[in-house]
Image (cartoon, one colour):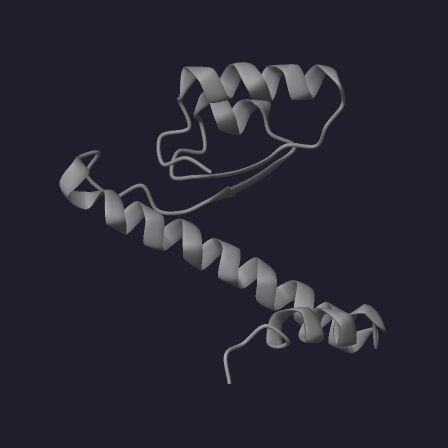
Length: 99
């Protein structure tokens, strides 16, 4: 997950993972970035955000929104399939809440 999709150290790790046939999912604002080009699955959001520290929080909100949509899709799929793991998932989330 990277706004620019250009962090050199992360790109090097991604290249190593790719050699080992590890699936790579990328969330970025730039669909033509180096990260996007090496990914197996690309999830991108609007890049109409200034590349400036003052606006960094906007990119983070976009990334969190993409993760939220994925989570919702997975849970809905589990509900449709009556997946028995859904009960365990719910327990894992609710069992440690402060009452």
